[in-house]
Length: 454
Ligand code: IMP
Image (cartoon, rainbow, N blue to C red; front, top):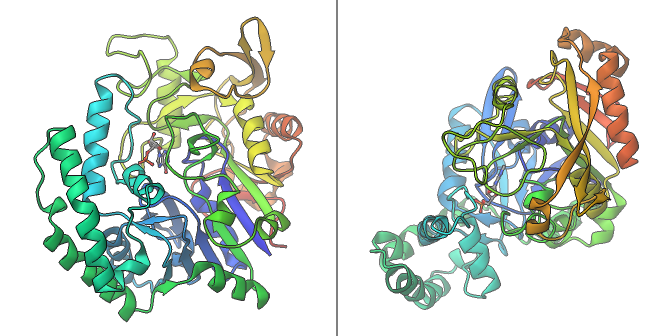
């Protein structure tokens, strides 16, 4: 069977920790979208591992697959693999030959476009990893795929077609000087060498066939989504999104398995007990703001709840794994979660960071939105209409800090009663069971009620 782990919010929900935990029952961990824009933190044997591309199962000795829906920067891939090897881990990572390759010019163009967009406040605050430009080339049928790196002649042909276009775009449209990142010979040498290494380590696969064979053999597969539903290019708040499909449908198109296989398994939505966001775009339940990310929030803006946002940010360690930027903070947003539950078909939920909110007198939730005098229970389809929404808040009594290790040992009923009331509200509103509750960053600091592989 398969278990698909999907971010229900805006990324950084703690998917890595759950993927790590549940990968124990799986033999294969597969990413189906995104690239080295992900920030998965895994704590194992007291050691912290931060991965941006390699699936979390690498730490646990699983077979790991980067599916065809991923965009792969070979530089990052080998850097992460070498770093893991230096720490005594021997990761087994396979890469889909149909996956697209991030080249240095994609990163440069990502930066240029963000700069240009920022002049009209359209910047997305991307991770700068070249994700959008690579997916653009994929859709434009001018991309370079992992399989192309294995054939030097094909690689050369593709570079000779695409690089002059990219150079012209940078120089003539954006007026930026180009360097090595746009030099065909330099790119050819570097990427042909990556191809040789991929081939010599026998790392490339036809992902669909590889995974289907594993399923036929009765093996369990964990699909590890990156980013989150509201960053999905189709179901998120466009244009403040990433360029792939983190939602569960992506696990089919991004791997080469049929949707029936994904749908036959479990689809677990991971959420935080509050909200965080890296980047711009509306956030109706936002507390305070972050200059450069929160729309219309300047150095001297005071909304009155900055202190609360700061406390949650500090308690939850809400700084970008990839970029180190402070994340925007808000109360839980139920319209967002109703939208995510429908778009993904969640069969279960994990609510993380219940411990982070401990100590607050009152915990609030955006239960619905008010828009044009009407009450809305899910998201409007356009970002502009979402910006116009005002959150209608509901209040819950807070819970005190607890001995979370004891709670982890004793299970769900040992959670503070008010925290359970809060969790039951979430589960009831989304009509979905809570499979686990995160009460700390460590692997053992999770109250598991149901193992989706069991
Ligand atoms: P990109 O994926 O680098 O193109 O960035 C697009 C948007 O997605 C930006 O707002 C990023 O901050 C956001 N984003 C991308 N990856 C992550 C992630 O792993 N966690 C949270 N936000 C992300």
